[in-house]
Image (cartoon, rainbow, N blue to C red; front, side):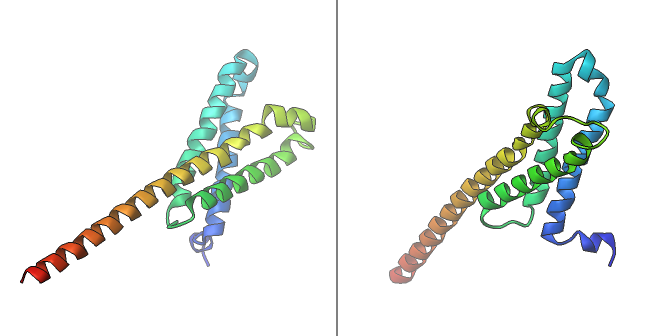
Length: 156
């Protein structure tokens, strides 16, 4: 089995996206780390935008193939990604090279990951609303078609 086959399954795709959602902002934070001391608000903005863009991209990819239960799926993906990011951070921030007390970690970084379930829940709700609108339109069109066909048949 090659790596593409391994990651074809939905759960593995969610995990892969979660790893990337953690790694991409981490890489950006290393690149922009100088700003953390020279311009902290700009650094925080860069990080928030990076998180939002990343979850937007991986969220769209994560919803591919989903045909129902969009809100539940979005919340599930978002919570999974949030949990993964916090768990992966633990090695760096609690015991690793960037050691921080737990409270400081959550106020500085950890709570930012709430963006993941919030954005994914919003995406799921938008998809659910659109799905319901389309289903209603299709049902109404089907009923109109049946009625029209019946009228034509009765007119003959």
